[in-house]
Image (cartoon, rainbow, N blue to C red; front, side, top):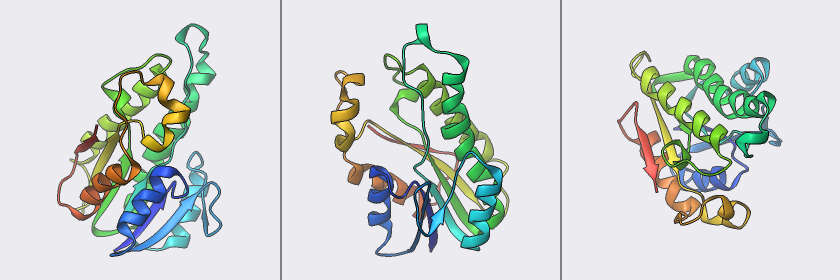
Length: 199
C-alpha cells in the first residue's frame, strides 16, 4: 500500500512509519518535512500535498497542536488553537483526502486518552479529542467506495513522559511502539468508525 503519514517526524509518527514501512510505501509529511511539507490548518496547503502524493491507499495523521492551561486564565483564542489545529486540521485531511484515496482506502486520525479521562489544564484537549472521535463515528457511515475511517486514542507516551508526566498523575504511559500497533490495525484491518484505545 501507498501510505501518507502526516506528522511523521514526531515520536508517534516515526513509530507508525517504522511499523508500516517493511510492508508498505511510506510518504512522510509534516510542517518540517523536506519531501512533503504541509500546514494542516490551510486548505490550499493540504490540497497541494495531495496533488504531490497522487492516489493513496491510506492516510494516517499523528499531527495536531492543543492548548494546555488552566480554565481560569484560558481565553477563546487559546481554546481555538486546538480547534483550528488538531481538530479542523485532521478533519481537513479527511475531507480533502477522501477524494485522493483508492477504492477500499482508509483514513486514521489521532485522539487521546483525555477524551475520556480529563486532566487538569486539559479542557481543550478533552473537547478536541471528543470532537474528532465523534467525527470519525459519523463519517464512517457516509464514506463511499468502501473507504474506511478510524481513530487511535493513545495514553500519554513513555517517550513524552518527562515533558508531560506531571499532567498525568497515576496514569501508566505506553510506548510509541505499542501505540503503533493500533495504527497498523486501522490501516490493514477491515473495521471502520472505531476508536482504538491504547491505554
